[in-house]
Amino acid sequence: MADDKKLTPRAEDFSAWYNEVVLRSELADYSPVRGCMVIRPNGYGIWERMQRALDDMFKATGHQNAYFPLFIPESFLHKEAEHVEGFAPEAAVVTHGGGKKLDEPLVVRPTSETIIYSMFAKWVQSYRDLPILMNQWANVVRWEMRTRLFLRTTEFLWQEGHTAHTTHDEAQEETRRMLGVYRDFMEGYIAMPVVTGQKTDAERFAGALRTYSCEAMMQDNKALQAGTSHNLGQNFARAFDLKFQSETGTTEYAWNTSWGVSTRMVGGLVMTHGDDTGLRIPPLLAPIELVIVPIYRTDEERSLVLEAANRITSALGAWERRDPARLRIHVDARDGMKPGAKYYEWELRGVPLRLEIGPRDLAANQGVLVRRDTREKRAVSLDVLGEEVSELLSTIQRDMLATALDRREAHSVREPISYDRFREIMDGEGAFVYAGWCGDPACEAQIKEETKATIRCLPDEEFRSADAPKRCLKCGRPATAEALWAKAY
Ligand SMILES: [Zn+2]
Image (cartoon, rainbow, N blue to C red; front, top):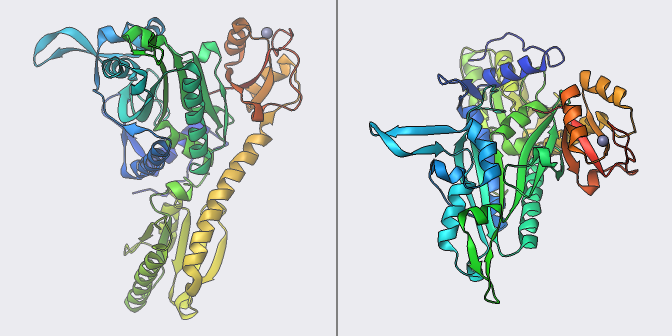
C-alpha cells in the first residue's frame, strides 16, 4: 500500500519523481533480473487498454494478427548487413538447449523482420498473394546497459506490424498510414500530442529505406520517441528471397514495411500527465474511470452510504449500457481507513474522477465529483449523475490533450537562434527547437556530441515553421531541411 511520504517534486528532480510515481502507484517494479521489469496490474491495465484500442485500429486498416517464434536462427540476423550491425550488439543468444550445445545459436528476437520475411518468402508466389498485412503482439529482448522502468528495459512488450507489397508506392503509403494511426492513438487515447516526421539516416532503423517517428514532449522538455514506422524497401526481400511473379510475368522482389509501439508509451503517459501528487490517467486508458468514496462515521451511516454507492454503481451501469464505452467504476468500501487517505491513494494512482458521498449529500440527493486533472469539485444531483460523469470524462480527456499541447508549444522555439543560444537552451531547461539543417551528417554528429541534442525528426509539413529556416544551425550554410532538435529519452 502507498505510504504517505510526499513525492519528490518534478521541478526538483524529474527523474526521481518518475521512478517514485511508477513504483508507488504500483505500475511496475524492478525484477530479480537486472534490466527487466515486472508490470503490475495497475500498469498492465493501462497497457491492456492501449492494446485493445490499437488492435481495433489495426484491424480497421486491414491487418490480421499472427504469431512468430521467440527464437531466431543466428544466421538470419546476418543476412541483412545493416540490420545485424544494428542489432547484434544488443542480442541475447541461446547457445544451449536440453543440456546440449546447439548446432546453431538462437537469437532471442530483438525484432522479427528476419524470421517473418523468411516465412513470407515461403507463402508468396504471385502478385495475387500480396499485399500481406500482418501484426504480432509479442515481447522482445534488447540487452540494455542503462535501463529505466517502461522507457528502456531489456525485455519489453510491443506490437510489430509487418507487411509486403508489390510496389514501392504502396509500401510507402502503408508506412505513412500506420504512422497516422499511431498519431491518432497517441493524441486520441494517451492525450499525448506528437510531432511526426522522417528520421535522418543516422537515426534510421537498421535495414530500412526510410524511418518515420512520433515524437512527444515530456514535462522535462525532453523528447520521447513513442512509435516508429519503417519503409524497408526491398532490403529484407532481397536478403530472404521474398519474390513474386508480377502481372506481366516478371519476377520481382516485394516491398516491406514494419512499424511498432511498445510499453514505452506507458512511460510517456506518466511523463506527459503526472503531477507532484502522482499519476493522471486519461479516462480512455484508465482501468478505473470513477472511484466512489463513501464518507461515514457510524455503522448506521456506513450501511446507508454504502447501499447508496452500490445503487449508484448499478444505476450508472444501467445508464452506461446505452453508451458504447463501458463505464469502469470502483467503490472503495475499505473499512478503518479515513476518506482523506483514500483520496490520497486514488490521486496517486491517477483515477480521473472521484465521487465523494456522505449522509448529508444523500439527504440532499447529491454527491461531490472531483476531477483528478484540475482538482475541481462540483456538487451534482444524483438524478443526472450518469450524464454528468460521462460528460466530465470526455471533457477531462479533451482538456488533458489541450494542456499537453499548450505546454509543448510554450516550450518550442521557432524563431531563428544562434548556436550559442541553442547550447544554452539544451544545457538549461531544454526545448523542442525547430532550426535549419544543411543535411550534412557531420553537423548533426557535432551537435549531438556538444549538446546531447539530436534531430528527432525532419517534421512533416504541418509542423514546420511558416518561414522555412534559411541557414544551418551549426555551420551557417544554406539549410536543406527544417529539423526538430531536442534531447531525448
Ligand atoms: Zn551544417
